[in-house]
Amino acid sequence: MDKDLSRSLHALTARLDRAADSILRAEAGLTYPRFLALYMVRSMGADTQRALAERLGVSEPSVSRMTRVLADEGLLRIAADPGGGNRRQLTLTPAGEQVVKRWGGQLEKRFEKLVEDAGVPYGTYAEYTRRLLEQVDGEGGRARR
Image (cartoon, rainbow, N blue to C red; front, side, top):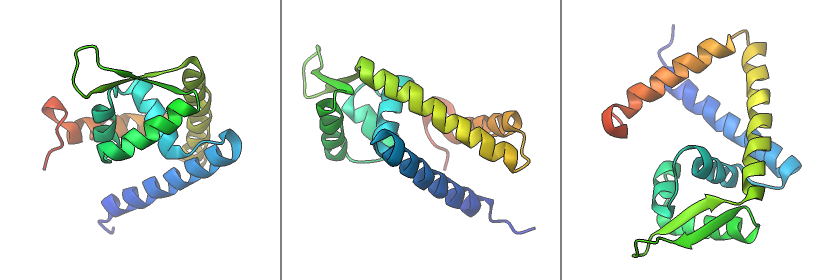
């Protein structure tokens, strides 16, 4: 057995990201990175531009540009932090909530079918993925090295 699971997971993730991007561009008029930004604001606690940049693994200026586009499209609200400073608070608009709910559900259904068609029990795969993410995150949400 070849020991290249890490590279296989990377290849799988890249292909899934491209497939999700293709689906969302064709059917929702939205890129996958922008969808992920909305998803992270809604579901992963990315309530500031800095937190969103950290979760996406991109620079704050990049997130600033992306959030402006999403705000212009009516999917995201950007507000100054009530505590002052240069922080920007992020919240979804009702339209943004709908996008995440609808397309998050659609993408997950398609992924579930893919997993099941490959003969892998979806629940088992989900549990193992959750465990791996917890292991990588470690205590305090920091990746182990």
